[in-house]
Image (cartoon, rainbow, N blue to C red; front, side):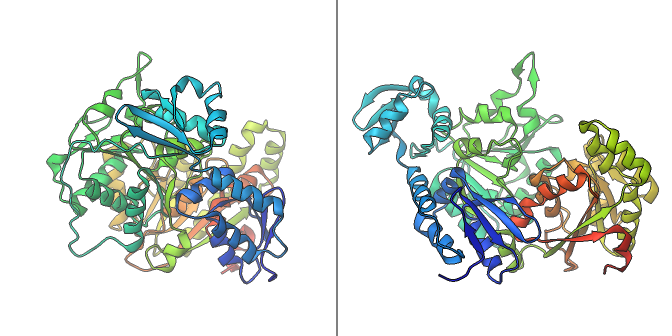
Length: 546
């Protein structure tokens, strides 16, 4: 056996020796089915999870392929228990299937013991009706809820019950001067062959175009759910540019506008808005006979939308995201209710093809002065992150970085409004927060794009679905604690290929030896899994570090 970079342990953890010459190839292959847990400098720790294995299987990877990866790169023999458990877990996917006949939905299995086991479960039995040969009839309302419970029980079902075609509506791609990239076409094909599910692509790799491609393939009324009104306007603009749809065919359903048209773009906020305890706009889900529902940034799907989605299983569903990581641990609900992962393109692979910009990541550590350190030491746990994250020492580092990149478009990103206000005033540059009206946000984004305002300070409202192709520098001064998805989204603001061809620089400024530094290490896990390495710099030596 070759002395590879992996050590596979019996508890399903996998250690990756970062300095090994085959580490990059091993990471690329391992990320298909394992999740990165810790990423210190020399040895990264991955864990093989049930959901990771089932997502890999749904995306077309076999147990043999996954074991081949472990055997090819392992330094020592793979423990027999891991090989056995991996095969057993992968084989569980599809042991149960959901089908439809003239009378309704059916849960079937060729394994009598499995079907008997699940049918006796106290949470599943109320969803089942009379037994039939090889299975049970399913209550009409229970298709989504049943899939949720089956995943929790460890027997994920493949759903072959089909989908309503929806009201036909002709949608064509207008490929004049452009065409779907190979990976975008593969994503659309894999989605349709699987029925419903999630496409995972890096920020800037054209997830919206994949959505447009799916709409053109479906030719049906489509409901698109997005994170905010700015995102809705960008989807509308992209669809008008990339498809045969006209302005009269695309409606916006948000806090400002209530239009229902053959293609309707709605915000998650409006869908989850309550009035007198009821979801006031729930009727939108059945306002037209939707044949396709697109969930943009599906990793941010609000919890109430999961419940609503459980009732939409007869409609084809496409989730789009840069990362399946959810900080609330509800990845299994995405898997069961939106669908499993159907396509996944590693970030570095898309970068190598020239479709997203290369990026360098830096963590710059500042020292808290004595007074701030004493305040931090005596503060309650819930106050310590704010004290560390808003340290005044970060301002001088921001000034140095802005000066270093004075000829580039720079985003400064923060979590705390008073910190954002202070830096905006000190640097004399515009700021954009959740309090900024939508019209003013769009004006600021446009000023940034055309170079009138080359530096923009933004809060977390700019994490998602914002198209700023010439941004090449991001300076993160504070974040949402240890959010891996936020780190990925913030780097993603830089990865859209720019007209200048400049490599992107992503800086995170953290207070040394505080929870700010601890949270930063957790945030970096996802990007480390994608092959991005963080260079650690000391603020005191920043001027001579380049």
